[in-house]
Length: 164
Image (cartoon, rainbow, N blue to C red):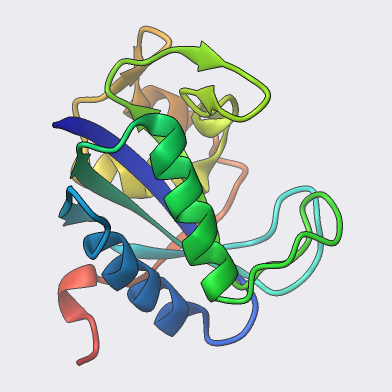
């Protein structure tokens, strides 16, 4: 099994509900197990406008290849009404593969690890919840997060307090 970390975000519609339904969809992926989910965080959009985002990170064990996982995540996005009218547009759902094992890859389809994850508090803070010992580019994620102090991020809801 491979280990993948998936970033989730939404700032259109019922964002919290959308993230929970997307997590259910991820848990239902073939040959995959949803192992852990961070708390949910509220963040302002970066390089765009629109409502605040709700963000989280999930750890998944999967037998899917990285390209197959990406394709499955894009199908989940579409099922939740994701449109891509322009770069950084507000979205009902955004799912990104942040890391896939220790794979380093740069193709037109997929760049791993995610090229900007070490610069984004909305990725690093939830990632710290579920992978506190992870390092990126030779540095602990906690150090990268400390450098993102200009990006406000607030706890929105503990995942363990998920509404039923």
